[in-house]
Length: 173
Ligand code: COA
Image (cartoon, rainbow, N blue to C red):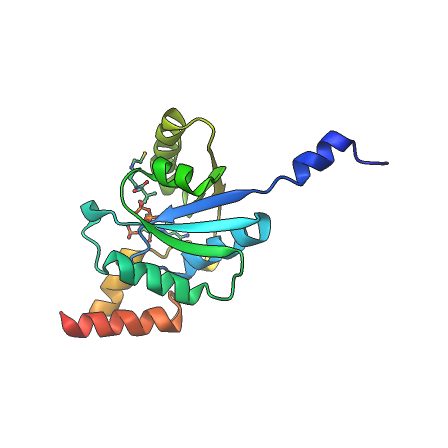
């Protein structure tokens, strides 16, 4: 049966999405979400938040550079740092939606609040949730940093380049 014309034009929409986070550093769980999003959407902008409130371990420029390096094989993904309101960044990029990863039920409450607040601020932008592969469900950047700083092996949780950056950073502290 032929697809109605209206439906075709909807399917052909160019969808640009922003995947925001602190990415301190980007883990294999984050990479998994980016790669899933890159298959679904035309353009994915990984928005690395300065997030001074979290007192990040890596400077913003380094977080952007690390994420850019590990995602260099994804042609429709770009990594951009931002400071300030997420919705202003999304507007400046001309994106239609925000992607967030949901690892467990415990993520839901915070994500629901964030999505609700963002919708109040800028109703045109949708929030879309993706789940990472089961093996990455328990990873978080702070746990990776803690394991590495205590001499544990983080090979299973981050790309080799990120592992090297963490080790170099730890040596300077
Ligand atoms: N794999 C692995 N870890 C994941 C993950 C995944 N798929 N998804 C989330 N995480 C982890 C992160 O590593 C992080 O762990 P950590 O706290 O141990 O470092 C935690 O889940 C959540 O971090 P992240 O996804 O980076 O989000 P965030 O909560 O640090 O930042 C922003 C969320 C950047 C989107 C939010 O702070 C923001 O919008 N900031 C801009 C200012 C603004 O607009 N504020 C108003 C918001 S309404």
